[in-house]
Amino acid sequence: MRPFTYEVPSSIQEATSRGGADAAFIAGGTTIVDLMKLEVMNPSRLVDVNPLPMLGIQMREDGLRIGALEKMSDVAEHPEVVANYPVISEALLQSASAQIRNMASIGGNLLQRTRCGYFRDVFTPCNKREPGTGCSAIDGENRMHAILGTSSSCIATHPSDLAVALVALDASIYIQNGAEERVMNLDDFYLVPGETPDHENQLRPGELITAVRVPRLLWARRSTYLKIRDRESYEFALTSAALALDLNGDTIRDVRIAVGGVGTKPWNLPEVRQALAGKPLKPETFAAAAKLAVNGANPLRHNGFKVDLVQRTIVRALMNLGGLA
Amino acid sequence: MEQATDSGPDCEGGSSRRQFIRSLAAISAGLTVAAPLGRAAIPEESIPQTAPPNSGSGLGLVRINLKVNGNTRRLFIDPRVTLLDALRDRLELTGTKKGCDRGTCGACTVHLDGRRVLSCLTLAVMAKEREVTTIEGLAKGDELHPVQAAFIECDGFQCGYCTPGQIMSAVACINEGHSGSEREIREFMSGNLCRCGAYPNIVDAIKIAAAKMKGEVS
Ligand SMILES: Cc1cc2nc3c(=O)[nH]c(=O)nc-3n(C[C@H](O)[C@H](O)[C@H](O)COP(=O)(O)OP(=O)(O)OC[C@H]3O[C@@H](n4cnc5c(N)ncnc54)[C@H](O)[C@@H]3O)c2cc1C
Ligand code: SF4
Ligand code: FES
Ligand code: FES
Image (cartoon, rainbow over all chains, first blue to last red; front, side, top):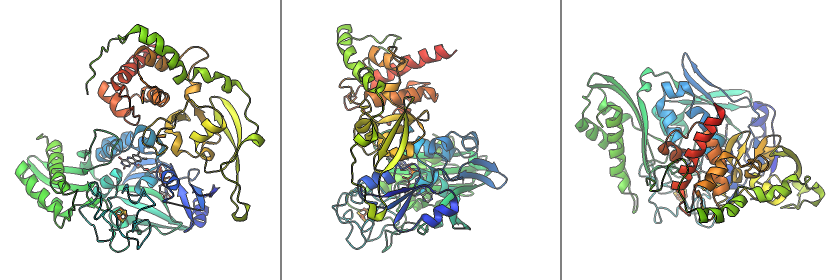
């Protein structure tokens, strides 16, 4: 780990003024301490955001508000979250381990970095870590990599399970820059790699995520997160699906759906949603709609199985939630 | 993956092996490091530094108080030092183990303000003024914590390397209310890997300890 100074700001405004290209914020530290040890991230100043007033989980008129410093474990078990947005709770409980969930914050979770092995290894070329050096994964080991939203520069998946659930629910984040606050849709916040895979989202240096807002959606009470992985627990997704289902008898009135493990960002599926709306609750409907999820998929040598697996994941999630499983 | 061994209240196990293991377990359980615990905090002048302070760019050592197992320890450390390294290398509390040093194995699990966390991904400066509990702080004098006792009773280990982390995690798992079924125990203990594969016995030990701890409370 390279040397750094440790700084503790006393207000949100001070924190944003202390941020910058040479600095990094630290919340739970489960991403950044790891990547600093590997010398993948080398801030010369580490700004501890933990004392800042960014806590609270509240159900309000317009939806759910979660402070950026709330821990994954506390959000997962919060009664309002469990009751109103099971998909969020389930996505969190299937993330990492109990210890990591006790440490990791919601803001940090949304900003965690890819688990691409080449990104984490400073001795191999990687466009995301070092722009212009090339992508080692495209012709290398790419079993865990993305099939959607990839480019010739980078094929890394976004690893957050929570982000998949939040994108499905059309959540937004609050971003603070000095005295200024803006609200941004989370789906728009994340960027596909294109030619600039080092540019992962719309956060500018020094900006803080202060909170997440999930719109009120009464039928999100019928929602779920299905995660398929190499082992039963404590593993990143091969594929996953976040799903909310609005039923009218045996007819699907509406759905919200996004998938994980397959995209370079949490992958929202408005086409699948449209294909399901108004249709009968039947396995045949599900399979036809799930096909649309892999439109434009670009599988490589080791990750071709995800094309099929993600469709099955969607179908299974629909079966489970529709009571057909 | 279902356990094949007896899951009754007193985990049948070879008792001679159990006798033999008991002394090993004492090490895992942290009893033999009682001496450093009682010792006064290491004077900060004698503490080695991992890196020289770089005064030119304002980098340098930080003075902190670490509250470990009820004792306050004063440390003068580089902010790069993890809680794990501070415990093991500075405070000589070597019960907490370093497995992967990357957050993937759980061997370094300790409690911070009563919650289980990974000390390898926690910077020591960020633990200042908070209550740290390690495996050395679990027993009350000579009386083992029920989870420690249950691990010995059930042979919840082979080599013992993962054991302090397993035990710290198990205590929290029970306190959190996540020991209701075998399935739940396995899920909420998944952050603690055991290369020896002692999982069935670990699950048994947690079931027994959970029942005992519940009895003590009510
Ligand atoms: C072994 C292991 C397994 C894991 N498994 C999973 C899994 O299955 N699913 C999953 O989703 N995740 C998983 N994770 C990732 C984990 O969820 C993230 O590391 C964690 O959520 C990051 O949160 P943090 O608070 O620790 O972030 P930190 O490490 O403190 O910060 C992460 C990044 O966000 C920035 N940051 C933090 N807070 C803010 C803020 N408020 N505003 C602006 N910037 C900020 C930091 O500068 C840093 O760049 C795993 C991690 C490990 C180590
Ligand atoms: S996939 Fe992206 S992160 Fe991985 S090596 Fe290629 S450029 Fe780097
Ligand atoms: S040493 Fe901390 S998780 Fe492995
Ligand atoms: S007992 Fe050997 S690693 Fe668990």
